[in-house]
Image (cartoon, rainbow, N blue to C red):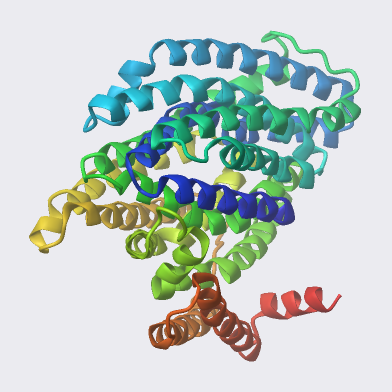
Length: 508
């Protein structure tokens, strides 16, 4: 799974670099990123997260009990019901593109707003295809087939990249953004279609239906509603960020989304991969209540250690030399060195809650495995309320008080989200401890990760500040290489088990 996510994210970085080359952080980039946020809501509401939490635990348990025919019946019903709902929402989204744009970007007017409306209409059908792809992912994950489903987004990224390079040369910013939107829809179709043959081999008697009376289907629907609402609450937070960023001036929305490509990489690569891989296994745990609790504790603690080993240095790198990373990946064409420094500020803010965000995903998976979808929902509501209040205060009134331009409030958005993320993580952990016993990282384990990570980040910062003017990629290599050596060497010396396991894998 990590290999598939890494592959798709690497192509995602190439896609973002291509967009940065043609659009920079101008009005066209703002419009594309805001427009994609609106149909992306549909993808996130009905897609991977919701189906993983509601569908996979039921489907995986039925397969673990040898009830394959019933599992296929549930899969067909979920497919039919979700796609019907998706089709209706897509039609409504295309028809209401204008009002939706007014909600997501209230600070825009004129050609910029008109372009955003056009892009929303183009992108919405692709969101429906993403939902179909997420259903495929749920089936594949339940059968422990991880690589295909998580590598499939490579085709989506490739479609955007190819469409840009073939058709965008010499076009205006609006033309480039429109071409990218068309490429996105084509890529969404490819991402779905590449998974279909394997799914049909695994579920040979699949029959899509609108059945709601079957017992297991009702369980999926019962779990679906709170997870759907919970994802809606979380997505509301992302919308609020975009709304606030639209008030901060040109480049704030695009800068926030560019930084998001970087800071969601460790969340996806380590948090999502571990959490999604563990969900079918935790859902298949059987035995007495004490045996199930012991199995969950064991998997949770092992997963938390794996997550932290890679996320801690990611946060330290964002703090120490985020501008170097942004420049190596995006500094080309209209994307300038100043843009790289701006993205660094946003990355530094995201480092505050990076570890909480990734570990929180694993705790949520444990709740879903226990068929409890309501507790994560209640806690998500608290986090979103905190994010909204703290985000507005940190983004709008705070920068002028500090003598900064308003656009630097984008860094306040990510930092405030990080604080809210830690509150969410604490509440998730406390609630699960009451049910299965104490879980989590020990203080000494965390210190043995942060000490070498911060030492490596300081060394990287010192190196990048003394380097002569060289190509951004060479500068990144000169900074990241010693950082990685210091972190790996330090964790080996401190006896971190994950470091020894990593070296053993590399040797094999």
